[in-house]
Image (cartoon, rainbow, N blue to C red; front, side):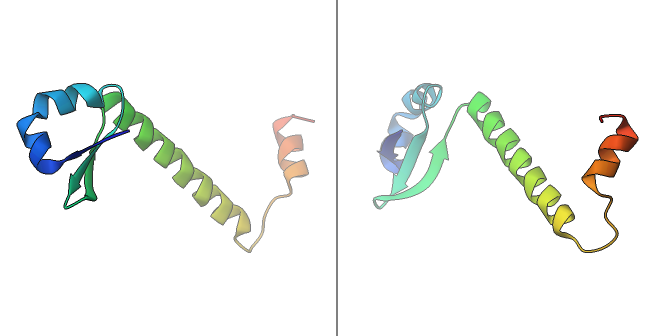
Length: 82
């Protein structure tokens, strides 16, 4: 991961875009991270990973929910997996 100041990134924008194709580029303002530039492919990977993580959280919440749940053994039997 590369870091560059916002003002320098303005001057070298094409180089920042080129660098972002192979690694994340952190744009810093006053020495602190302000933004990250990544390739479209990496951005899509990150979105997919986030969606998968959200699905896991939703699934875990549904499993933890109180109520009439069907035992796993019954689900397997109903699907013919036993």
